[in-house]
Image 1 (cartoon, rainbow, N blue to C red):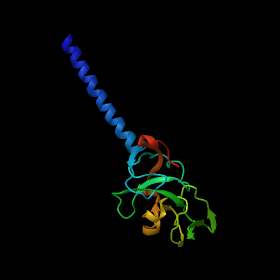
Image 2: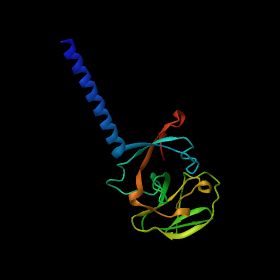
Image 3: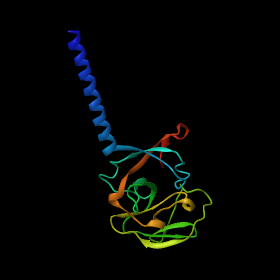
Image 4: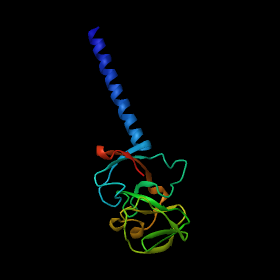
Length: 174
């Protein structure tokens, strides 16, 4: 009986491990994924070496909104992932004049930007349908849509939700 009990315990252990692995794959593939921030392009919102959680389901039933911090496949090399802020939505005219963002000729407040930041004029450009204009918060140190163009909707991975590391920076991504 002890041998039978031992074989049941081993079978239950293997089943539990297989279920855990399958659940982990499903969760990471479809729901949540951790990402590591390798550059200063999103400072002060995200710092080098921050670790964030991205919800992959965020845009299943709704479209990205201006100001969302998103992770997407880099348009010029889809093996790389980038994190930037959604600035321009499909059909909008984007222009930067005197370090200020204008969308459809209306000044947009950007409280997430570092104070006293100065960056070059850009545009105007119109965002194509089914695409987005992305920019880093650290505008002087960001490779973004000003350099490589628009991000197609299908390249979006998900919305950055939460910083979980380092411990002193835990909180929502805003």
